[in-house]
Amino acid sequence: MLGHREATLCGAAAGAGLLVGLWLGRKLLSRQQLRTYKSHGGANGDPLLNYLLQTSLREHPLLKKLRMRTMAQPEGIMMVACEEAQLMANLARLIHAKKVLEIGVYTGYNTMNMALAVPADGRVVACDINVDFVNIGKPFWREAEVDQKIDLRIKPAVETLDELLQAGEAETFDFAFIDADKVNYGLYYEKCLQLIRKGGVIAIDNVLWGGKVLRPGDDRDTLSIVKLNEKIHTDSRVNMSMLSIADGLTLVFKL
Ligand SMILES: C[S@@+](CC[C@H](N)C(=O)[O-])C[C@H]1O[C@@H](n2cnc3c(N)ncnc32)[C@H](O)[C@@H]1O
Image: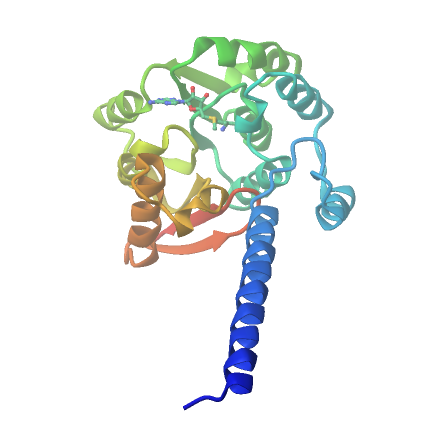
């Protein structure tokens, strides 16, 4: 039996434990948010991300101009993070990519980024359903003189991927970036695996989804991302790495 003094001490200890737990929980949550920061022209007040950008970003002046223009849009947060785009351009150059798939164009920051990374006879097949978004980017593509490398398809991306497969383009693409509607991520992944050559790369954006992957609940987008993350982890057809850059980027290397 506990005496009155011991019982009081136990109660105090339990209360303190609860407070520390709450404090730690908050700390972890804010770290989780930090890890999923996108740097859209600023580091969101994070000094370390600011340092990273200042000492590593090499952005084409017209990409910067498009980024600034896109940030003026109410939904500008949808744009890919610039440091993430730089990594993908470097990967594309490393594997001498000539044929690239962009699934989800928005204003075309990464479409233009990849068009700059591929050689003069390279091609970026760019899929989106929203012509208004894409029209914001087009003048910048022209100014950068990469518009002739961009094959824009305005229709649901699944249809474009099926058309490419029917046209005999399986295993001919070098790089794909999946960044459109989240509920179709699983479908995009399977179709990209068919379209990409051995040794090619598939990059998948938003795989941490602002931390929501820890608590998916019944949100369809989050559940779709979690399902694909788990599938890729054990997929023997590929090698893979999940990076905590921006909102999370999985890199898949086809075997
Ligand atoms: C996150 S944004 C893409 C960002 C882009 N990758 C960039 O470089 O900034 C997602 C885009 O996917 C497009 N989208 C949504 N559903 C789609 C679908 N079923 N097929 C093709 N595009 C779709 C949206 O219109 C939007 O422009």
